[in-house]
Length: 351
Image (tube, rainbow, N blue to C red; front, side, top):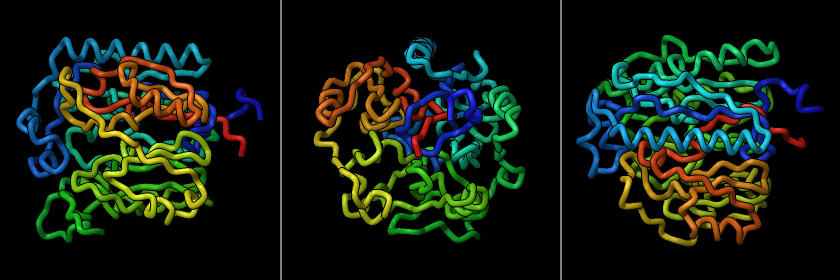
């Protein structure tokens, strides 16, 4: 099958050659506001007080983050990858939103299907509609592509109601209940027809059941048991670098747990061997230094990595990867890294 004959959405793993991708834009980004229980469960304690309605990130920080996203997009274009960008200059502060820089949280490709997240945080409810509708309209012109939009029933403001049973699947009690489907698509990783996900403070059982309902025939979800009381997104916990090779955060998941999943049973699994350190400037307002695992693999041989993270670059190179350095510290500061900032649309799988 030639690239030109592939559907506009055609991706079901994290490592096959990337041919088309969405790269986010920061816009006039602000600290996302959400109920205190949701914020305290997930955000760094020293920054919790910043997560108030209408509190923008500093303009200089956003300008630098936007420049990094543009540079990242240019790198991908230079590699021959088709890059889609969301609407520019969105005033997320006025909209009581967050940003358009992290589309991985809200969209996931599975085969020829694109699934929109049922966000738990109210401030993100319309993020995909506001920032990415034009992209979805373009993709939907291909009749082979199915786009699953968030239904009205998934906007119900009931996730903190006390009279609904908690979504307690492990020793951790999550901030949200199971009253309606809730999930961020960044809580899932694709391994061919097997999708590995995690429950978290933004993903509940009803959300997992919702995704299962819409998956193409032959696809399944398996849930990873992660030891993370602040769990929110799986893409700083595990990272498949190529078919048969995965790196992981040993403070959150064990090799035994990873091998419990048949799709990973025979893979080479490497724990990140260092304790990553947070930069002093700019601050990591929303994340941990484990963003070192939040990288974008281009083809199972090359991976885009933060330019200043020489320790991680050397380690990935020791595993046989070619690293493409890209400055991304200011994007990191507002909530994510290369995997967060993208949505795979087309990967040319050999399967």
